[in-house]
Image 1 (cartoon, rainbow, N blue to C red):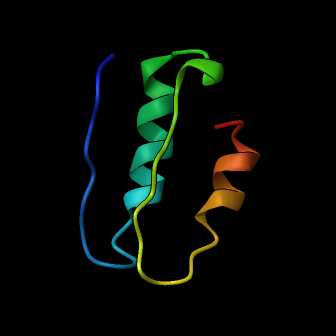
Image 2: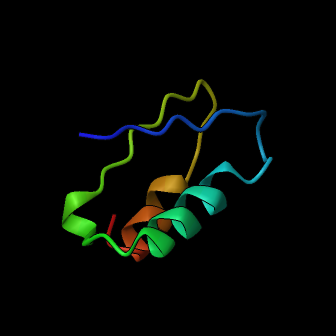
Length: 53
């Protein structure tokens, strides 16, 4: 298992970077997972759902 950590301030583009990285890795979406630790309300799960992650 390989892990990548993406960190940064709110609204800095972390979700976009993650989605573009997954697309470039050309790994089946059922082999990729995202764990989000956020103290603020977020709708990122909707973007991940749109991409099948």
